[in-house]
Image 1 (cartoon, rainbow, N blue to C red):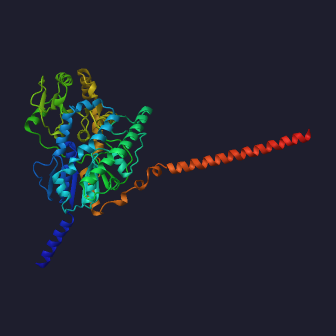
Image 2 (spheres, helix red, strand yellow):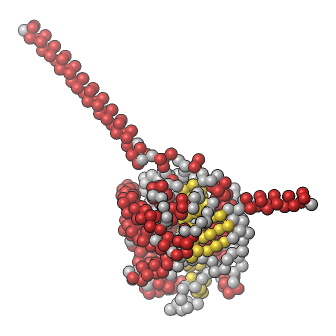
Length: 521
């Protein structure tokens, strides 16, 4: 009996010993960002860890998991974004023709202000001033660097989650090389290889971003740390403190680029096996004998806010198709709706893309949507508007599984031509299937990879052995400016000495010859 009790106690102890307290911070006021964060945190809770999530959304019902799952919802972030859009009378479709230079400056100016309510929220402040401790803090990278100081405050290692592939925001904090000669900046839509003009613009954009971050963004984030976190560390001690970065990317979707050891690809970890569709959607897609088109502009953009001239051009193009169209439309009525269109305010995107009759996905080109369409091998027609959407759309075009139509160029004829080209040319579906095969060809699933690395950081109390020495070098040493200056000086001095030495020898020889001539005469 005593032996049995001992065994039971040992089992319980070993199970408890593997449980960790994890804080997740995913405060970006965009549902796609929350989907990534909550999917990871729920998986960690399912593994038996005790999870706390600070976000702008939260779960309607607490998920049933082996560990605990606690929500801290910051509602002010969403309200701030709505007020900003309303106050500036901004329709998000208006950002289509925004210059990448203006877009970069706009993001750098607005994001630190927009994200501040997360730290001043009463529930977050209560957590900060509690005596709680965490084994690891996971923060999404979204121009919210002050939130990383929570890891220092709670005495825990820091893990960063990038909602996109490698970019300036993450490369700079782990010392990852990112030559602007062939890696486009995030707000551009450049194809690889870059032309000379694109390399000039890319270099200028990089320099402007550097100046904005060093002179405005980081100082603004530093002020937030000092204001909201007791004895908060300096931003310079926070920025380069990440043990690992979980990258929402994969070579089947993103451009292959250099990675330092603590950058881990987990692109597609949010994708789940398709579920059974609601009966009305199942019947609609099953009855689409000529195929179906799925149209969604994501969670931030609303199709219902399309200007009438763009909406009507799209409707006229759809009305000429034999294929059925499933459209995510946020209102009850679509003026002039053709019979082959079915509307819904919400649609189970992943399960729809898995249906064999879906032949085309018309999308804004967000990374989650792009990842899901590659997962299921469905070609896309992208209408990118802002952020990384243009780059994702351009990648789809370059990789052969989609086409792109600029929002400003949407007409009935252009829209129809692009749809017909994708539907009637088998190369797009073939390329999409090849990309899907590459996406699925992994040793373990992306979620298993993400969980392994989170637990790895917990086991090792951080991962300082993965940190590259570049982070400890000042910029002039990293770029070898001191070595270049030294070599230029040595070469210059050697050249000068050689020049004057040769000049002196030449003069001496000339003088000897002159004196010889004089003697002979």
